[in-house]
Length: 480
Image (tube, rainbow, N blue to C red; front, side, top):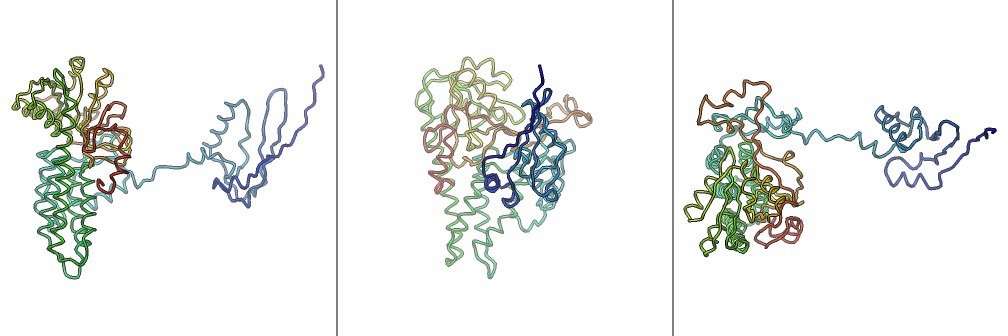
């Protein structure tokens, strides 16, 4: 059989390439011309040669990674591509162009320039940790300081009550999102009452600058909770809304009144509504699992017990804070039947439970719930055993941010708190710093995906956790 001789065929692309490239933003329309494709048949291989008449002096060479990617893509399709020619930027795949993009160094805390800038602007000198956990290197990790007041920059710029509050935060004397937020707002209220506007200065503008070093001080002592950041945003807006033509006394009274209203409406009254909604979820002979300590969850259980409902509570706790011990004490004083256990033992009682109550540190826009570390394990166990997992969260803890894991945003605590200090030098981890290959990680929070959460109870009602954007949009003027 005689072999048939193949002849090259020329095919012109039948669409306006210049207009397509102009709208996509990959090339200038004046320099783009139709691409001619030469297709040649052979007994062994099929090849496609792409040629462009664009000026070669204006076309960049493909990098090694781009040529490798094109060869791999062509191999999957069963064709070979000549990648030795120079291609215009318009002919390069947008996917290959996207590979050149990198994360801006300005948003990485582990970048040396970013770290130096942060340390330069610190109100308190903090010693970086000696044994950095690489996976969490983008988060600030410090050694525990002997004194947080010895090396404060601009001590005169920070009110004594704010310094005292920072020490309470650092020593974990005040924990919990609501407690920390109320303490911070009351401290700022005292600062505003003692504030005096300098001559030739506006109250609203100068007060905002006056509070800035105090806020930075609290951030450097311990990262702010999401609820505290929302409260600070509200405070700054209240200061900015003060009219410029009123006396200073009236201006300070207006701001302090706004702080009191925020605490009353967004925290105190909100918790009362949440308790009323939560009681409806408690029935006789229920076995409820709670984790760590949540003030609104405890109030719900106590009020349900006062109404005569009979139920049992499993108090699950974990190191190093052991917040569950405080919850157990409060519930026992109220006469509620309780069982205390650690997190690693929750699998032994999960089949006996009927529902799970959780407190919340933050509720993200994608429905993920951030709470004390270990709460995601409780939520996952409830999801696997088909138990309703109910999260209690005030709307001022709602955030427009989206978070999928516990790594991107978190708080790294003191690693020494994981050591059993009560045993002194006899503790197993007492000399962990001398072991080069050993690092201790003490993160404070974790994130539970929305599929693990059955219901969120807030002051606006009982809603699915994915309704956060709706609440923020509908109540944005009043709640943000």
